[in-house]
Length: 419
Image 1 (tube, rainbow, N blue to C red):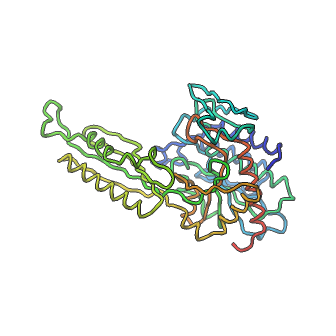
Image 2: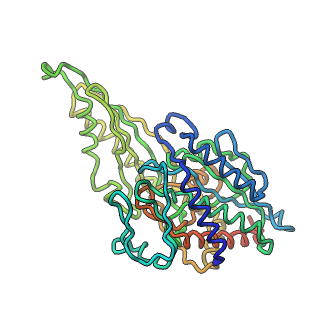
Image 3: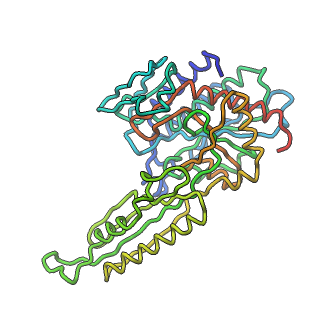
């Protein structure tokens, strides 16, 4: 997509969305509060107003704040199979996210970008950034994250809708849209209105660098461990006290450091202790476990049990309980059962002059959950980088290319009849 006016509308839309608070809250989401924050409700209501203003059909915001709408098919193509596009409007809890002040860098000259509070972006240390000379970049001011994950995806989808409604010469079948809360907490599809969706395939617009086309992700489990000790007066603790805090620390220390997120990449999985709370009598640890291979995942879960028992043996009188919860699975297998869904997307990339980059997602998306629920859902790039941090940035030129890919995808689905 090379239309400067459409790119400007995309930029303006993204900056407005990024400026709106919508950070989700993991602890509240885990407690069953949905959406986990009031700001997400405000964001969803604003998006609903935008969709109505564009003239989309069947705009609906349900009680769980999933926002859905439809782009009507071109005349004569109403009977073509519908496909869907999805993005999440919450932002991550890994950095401050209230009061985001996006900074636009037009025709970026390639020089380092200084942000507030000592943060900076230096192309000498960032190959992806160095490739963006002459492009329009958007960063935060350094006091917060930017929220391009996934407001770049939200802006791309809505810009596509606007473009298709304004361009009757682009022939396409029916297209379904869904915007979801709490993806960053892992609860994004917990209450998705699957019964209302008509599409046999969806695409999440939630990837990173230009060209990424993601069809596989981690298998994901979370493990909650409770360490129960024995309290005693510290002055008379010898032979009596079993310190649950020490038990938790010993367990964490027993996890293999070479199998952590910071020590792995590519197809290597990991153990990641994320939270530790407690006192001498009782402590708790939350561990995320990730692996692309299901058999390896089962071995990792067994290893947790072994390490928990070893901790009990090291601290006689103490006990360890283990609760395991599956979060999502690798979507590759189910996508392989519907090759046309990925093949049409690959064609759209190629028609738009982009070579697909088929790397695994070292994480998960709403698409992984949708795929498990029976709706195959690959992931498309947005041009965003350094996600979940104060140095997050996005190339609007690359986001515009994602919109162009979606235009070609719409045409291909409009001409397809075998789904």
